[in-house]
Amino acid sequence: MSELIGDPGTAPANPATSTGAAALDVDRVSFGYPERRVLDEVSLRVGTGELVALVGLNGCGKSTLLRLAAGVLRPESGRVSVDGADMAVISRRAGARRVALLHQSAPAVPGLTVRQLVRQGRYAARGPLGMLRVGDDAVTVRAMRDVGVREWADRPVETLSGGERQRVRLALALAQDTPVLLLDEPTTYLDLRHQLEVLQLVVRLREERRLTVLMVLHDLNLAARFAERLVALRDGHVAADGPPDRVVTSELLRKVFGIEGRVGRDPERRWPVCYPDRSIPLDTENRFHYH
Image (cartoon, rainbow, N blue to C red; front, side):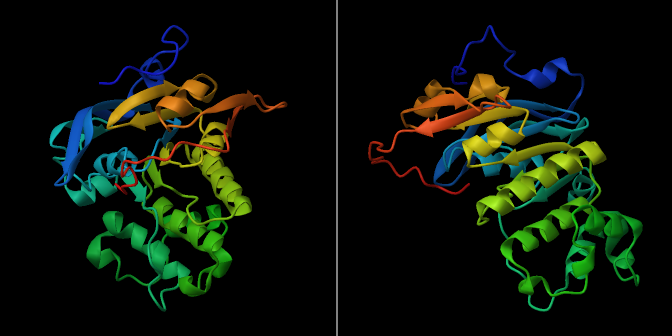
């Protein structure tokens, strides 16, 4: 594993290890696609109730790690467990009762209403026969209410704006009623206002529902503002892990993102803020993979 960036004397490499049992435990996991190896013996523990953001360049393995955590992919070696259950061993349906994964994007199915989409999140709990029942169950109603989309229940999803559609997709994930929520770029394609709205919603839902949240974010400033812990991936390894004010440094910008810049502090709330240089060296390697 690559050496962790930062001062090892200021914070433990994995803060979750000091907070009790892990809700999500990634233990020396390796995974690759036919064209390249993506993760190499990655270990990561997310404690119950934590809000953790994964950051790093495209292709470093962030989305792959989420898919492994959700049981969508199976590791080549190592183990991914949620509340002690091996996600590679249990059934997909059993895994979907433990972990909900919000993918980066999904095309809207023509004619599908908000209610019909959110109800699909109940499949793991209700099964194919249960899905035929008429009416919404209490979990579906709560999911729509908690993200503020219940008034749109009978509107076609395709008629909603990007921000509205993202809230509906978040309701779909909440309808699975799982203790662990995985979010892959929940702010993709959103303007700044709607990015803030979605992330504020995630923070509120995590507190109200006592969720464990692991999310991928590309915007390092937003990640530092909303997550209580950052995990940076570089070349398939964990390069840094800890509180934002200790992880987000000029060294991180240089070694993980390949840019020069400085890091300041928000004058009131003291979270780190990155100020990258305007000019960066041209990256001659094809680092823009999407895994």
